Image 1: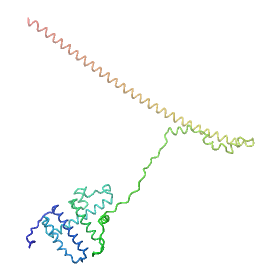
Image 2: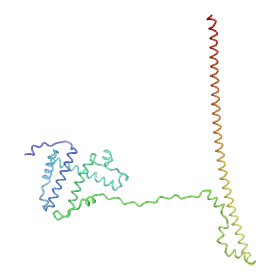
Image 3: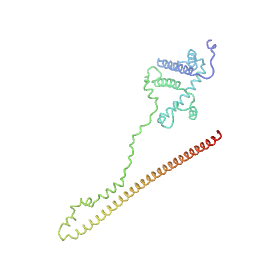
Image 4: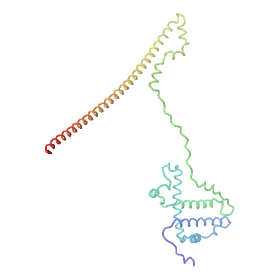
Length: 313
């Protein structure tokens, strides 16, 4: 009889009504969990229609004037939207957050949500409340068996199981070191400081040198060694001359650059002097014009005064 007097509210659900519905569903899940751990069979629980009637009663007591059919339909819509948002958030977390190319659901606008086939009006407080309900339900499903002899999984472990897998950490990469190339000055210094003794020092005690210091019967070998040493000296002298030529060319280029810089500075100074002289000429011309105008004005005043004197007599 009391149900016949109820006038159910129609239209869109408010946030407060949705939160009351979520709380009612959570209370119903807890009641079913207590019945299951109490040793009763799952068939002893009330059918789905009676369970949603209990949800309606809870909502009605807390100011949510909705029928059991409205509550059932609203819950189905909430779970459908919740699963879409949760799956999208998991993909974003696996991809590495906002830096992986996709933004979080809470950072995109309604148009982007529609492009990803996501609900456009899911609120954070509703999502968090649904997460709590789903976690409690997951813990109930993890209980071993339908009777009271099962083991309840702790909440911390259940939350750990629900977390998405993190991508493997990338090994740190070493920064690439740029190769250093010798400058022209270093090459010239190396060429100019090169001497044949540096290459032949390790062969100073060679058999050829000892033969050159021996008797006349080894004179032929000594002559060949002398020829090789002279050719090496010629190569070294040519390298030294090339280095000196390059150094002179670089020095002359620097001198020309400095001379050109001095010429540019002198031209700039001359231009400044010409501009100053032009300004001085302009000032003098203006002063001359002003003096001439003043003299003309004075003469006109004198002439006017002379004409006025006879008339006054």
